[in-house]
Image (cartoon, rainbow, N blue to C red; front, side):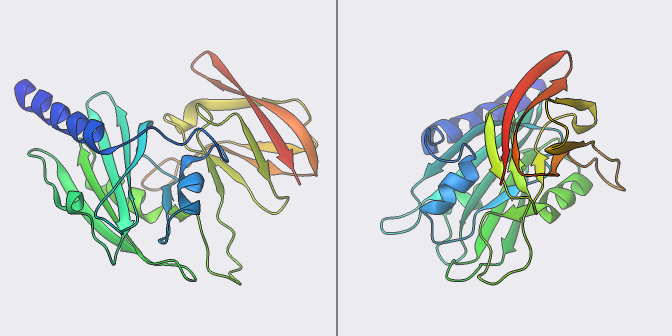
Length: 235
């Protein structure tokens, strides 16, 4: 069993090393939003990652003349989710790879405006089906159709992003492991309030921030004895 797990981990790591490049260093700080700018299909960002941390974000070429595909890995211990996204009109060959001992799940998500629909594929290890169902149900589009009244939450990994700007009518959701073990200290509590994690029927929601007033403040997030300083502007 141990040798099989080692082979499985090696296979996933090999695929990531071969097909991905480091996340863009410039832009918003959110790699999903940065990637959306150059793609002709809708990029979806998970608001729930089954307690796994982002360990790799990259893009790879599917075929000449086609949009690149996203290739992202979330992991913690022996559990992992390898996420691939590509245009549903130009399916990536890698989307059909199957690793022994892993579960492959394929879901098609709608397009928006002139952006094509998206095929979202996960290759997961050690993740329960109920958790995968929540993972797919909480995929948030980084682009919306013109005229849409639905404003997607701003999803942020505070271990990567240290600054964000948000409108007064939106909210921030922190995509973090152990979501129920996070708290926050806010320098100016008139600008924003902390939203603690809540236990849902099948999962635990992410902690976040709710804007209260336009302005700037510093938020210090606390997790397992460590502090993460985060700057926020509400406009």
